[in-house]
Image (tube, rainbow, N blue to C red; front, side):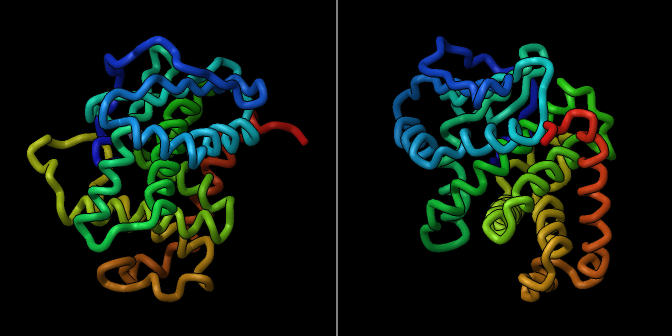
Length: 251
Ligand SMILES: [Zn+2]
């Protein structure tokens, strides 16, 4: 997740180990054979069906007219990415371990649910780039923020479970900001990790303030920002709903 800032193609294509097409949706998942220390992370992703959940949710919502592939691969810390040349999302096994380590810097060992939540958020973010490309969506604001907002939308559609997952992702961004090891990597197109954390919390609060009264605070969601989150979330949801409207599945 920390390395999700790395965009563009990467050179870790290998022969398919297995592939599934989510109900003929045009979005195909390919698991490649994990190498070495990635085996546990691969087993975790398979067991938790994180990739399948993300792909099924997107496929149930929108129709894609060009196929998108999602490769789950060993990629030596290159970070998840989307490659427009191949309409290919790549998710790295080692981000599971990286996420565990990230949470580990903040405190005691975290539940698998939180690690899976962060991976799900990453999956939705990268899939958003694929949708923008394949469906030629009009992007509102910066594409990286738009992709984060799609992840928020897909999680918050799930109700309370998704709210908890988005808050877990927000916490991971916050820890990343506080313990940032990437300060020398120079600027990228993403908002800062801290800003991404606050944005996600704002969307949760905007969608369901009543369930999250404790979310507002100087170190979590500043009160001045919180006041506008309901409107902010409505605008975010509307911009994605409008962009996807011509491509939504009927019925
Ligand atoms: Zn991105």
